[in-house]
Image: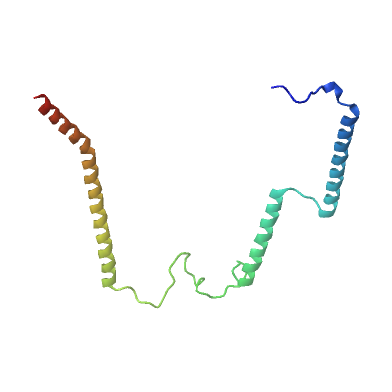
Amino acid sequence: MPRSYSFEPFTVSKRSTQTRGGLRRRDKQQLSEKRAVERRTDGIHYGRNHAETEEMFQVRAMNAQLEALAGLSPNAPVKPTATNRGQPIGALPLSAEPLPSRSALKDVYDEALRQFRALQSGVQDVTNATSRLLSLPMEAARLAAQRLRLVQG
């Protein structure tokens, strides 16, 4: 397809290329001056990763202050509460409730046994259905062979 314009590299005037280069150079200089002013006014800027690190440092410092105010820091005086009575982490709190009765434990055991038996019968049903599904193509082939014998004989 022919071009709708003609381009000859020797026809571009030197003045237009110098103007463009001069503008580019002047823009770069203005940008570098602007950055230099920002550095002087804002301090040193290390980039996004450094900013995130500074932010995390400030968050940790605020958390430490909150823990100190709440009495949760290791340097804070220990006040007897429900959580620091000498129990290991994850231990159930001591309560005044009596232990569950044997009948309640037996009920839980019976329910677990019933659920296990239901699961076991479900697995047996799946096994039976799978074996039946796998035997269907062979049964279809056997019936087709019998029909062929009847047609031929």
